Image 1 (cartoon, rainbow, N blue to C red):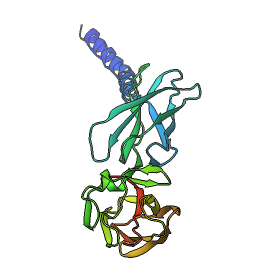
Image 2: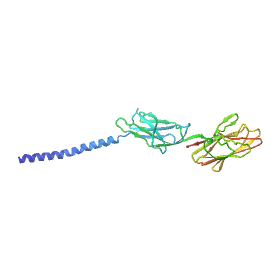
Image 3: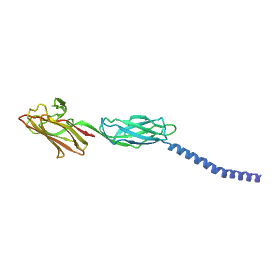
Length: 271
């Protein structure tokens, strides 16, 4: 009886020795499989065609690729304003056979915009998102609609002042209230703008033989010094990149009376 007990004990120990590596192998395989399932996430790459755009002139195109390819499935474009936490959907696209995609957006507001591409979960894989892409969005706006600073002999609300040049109406223009009296107006851009465009001329109400002048100073430096006569029309674009403040000075004659005009000036800004 003692010999049988010893034999059974020996067999049990031998079985444990053999089963041990097998059990460890099975456990290791299960852990690896669980790790693989946990790491099974779509990888999304993306890039933009332009990192600086203008409202109404440019389209943001986001191109990228999804791995695994997930052909025929959907990717979603999301965006948010810089400094915000909430992402908002703004477009969808179908993934091509080679795993690539193209998404488009037409910004309508100025400011810095952040984009990312989301590939929803599917076919056992978790959702994936691309790195964040930053785009600076500029917009043309009427200078006279911005808050004006120091001024003299300029209407209290320049944004409501219109001018006639060659029988054509120009709204939101800068023009002296009284002829023969110096006029000026200042605007703070705060280094948020890149360009200024305007038309310089004498208003149609100026008398024959009248003259005038328009001077533009950007942070104290003269950028435009344009003399004007009746019938003369000058279209101008000025670089105001990194400009903090600009100042328009308008000179007119009292006799014959003249009305020099900065017709519908606009600035391209992010804010």
